[in-house]
Image 1 (cartoon, rainbow, N blue to C red):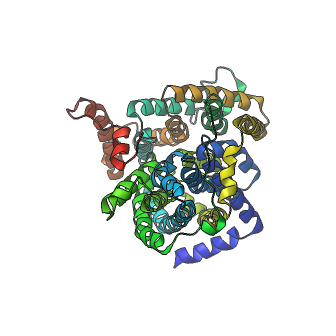
Image 2 (image 1 turned 60 degrees about the vertical axis):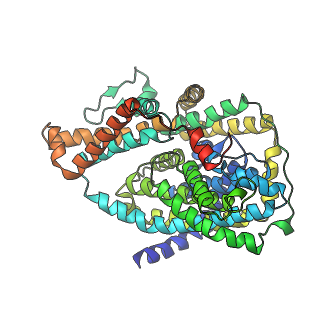
Image 3 (image 1 turned 90 degrees about the vertical axis):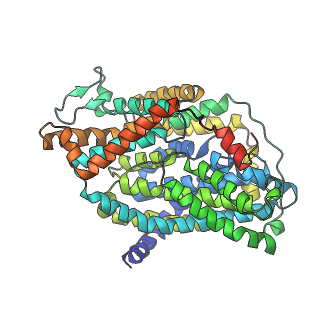
Length: 509
């Protein structure tokens, strides 16, 4: 009952004009981001992060979260109409969605994708309401040693945040940790690694770093990649609704997709993409007509679209309750909160309960807004793919530089963003993911504070950390994960590639 009362209070705040406007802005930008291939939700959040500074923490978080889950909706539009996924999680939708469009059932595919996304997102928010407070309450018993162990555990498991090479990702985490030590020492008050540069004494600001790594690097990449507009299948409003048989065949795939995606969002890695693969594979195996998959099966749209929306919502649970960004977009959300002096984690819900329930309530409202936007205006959003890159990219770049400068009115922040933009572009070219670097930069302070305060508590004995049950368990699991990733290279079996997984799911690469 407390949860329902808190939700009611959150809804009262979320229905104010200001919150409705920022929620609409977030989901609208997310929708557009999902439609436009290349930028992605992370890039869009990085670009608009400075805009949240002039808002309160609630409005800023609502806008950024709206971009995140709104992009999951928008990605299905071009997947179905153009056979071009707006972002990675919509790749699986192209298999049957585009085939349905070629058969004249584009409207039905888009409607089922929107309805499935809405149902899955709404059910996942219910899970967020109940699971996040429970997880946060369990973590309230943590002291400095436990926070150090949690930091180690987070850094290890988030090293594989994007599902790529563990070694490369762990290297990025270490670099992020090194960057987090720049500035004033937490204990002695002396400058560290500033090289007599006054601007570095306050540390390396997270915002220009993420704007460079995700936003500017993506712009460099898109600008240097040939882009062409695919032929779009046109639909009429009267063709937007599925028939009785398509609706009946979609009900259980939507429910199963929700229950597949929700737990995937609780795990580090590309949860949205992997949940769609698992959902597609599951529906193909359970279907009475598996031969229809890849040729226009409605289940191949309903299940994966529901799964990726459930995963994007449940990813908010470890982010808000533990302070762990299990996906690149939630790392951007973390940056947005830190700018306002609010740290997600075990104390977040108890200290900022009003903010938590405001965000939960706004997600209900945002899902309704997206459903309304998707059904009648799908043709308008799809036409955005015709905007030439040579017009779009300069506008986005200008917004980024103005936003980065407005944070501290500092030219130095522009240089930081530019440098990390170049670094991010090189990393992408060399197949190094930037998200683990941001994780190291964000969690570095928790890691250092927990270690140094814990050593003070144990009088300098690190072995005493293992005498505390929670600390011992977390450190033990972290050690096992590292050993597994080291020794599995020498095991006799060969690891399956992503291409193998895609082929097993029916994806032609």
